Length: 263
Image (cartoon, rainbow, N blue to C red; front, side):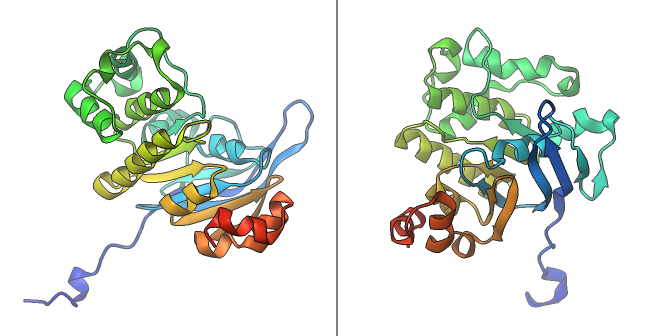
């Protein structure tokens, strides 16, 4: 019988899931370039963060990967293949996008969680209130969360409801646009813990955009630093987030930037 060092026991190599190949985005009215030619690949089990100053192209990049906005050049692939227009709904089932300010429907949280199952793409699936409640509890919500009116939710609760609404559909990739923006520390910690749990227990691959450099370094193994629509650096957070680079990017002294990146 082969031992644990045998090639039979070697872990499977990571699989390329979503990839951008020279994608470019321009402002439709002004023609200004919002995202210069950009290459990027997310692999199975990976957690990546996109960070940079306001206006650097973080949301533009995520919306492009979600195929919510068409590329002006280049293309996006799923598992190495270009995505035909007819296959976009199926792609979005595998690659789910959550906006910075997710829209909530009138009614209760449960009404919002049931809504996706009324769509054609998910008519082969069924709402499971117990599974939804487990997801909500993993994010620190109580047993009454599904009964709350959507209009009464705080910003943090609305973010958690939107996450549960998507997570119950079991996507392979989650695109999170500023998931902790304007949230207090309590909700930042809860959302960070949910991201960790999704990765460790369910194998969800994640790309998130954030201004919070510490949050990015704590919860992601890969970081892409954008500046004016260009990739300034990418790699492990410790390599990308140097005080000198962050200081130059945000026009502050490197000594001031050091605590921001945990140095």
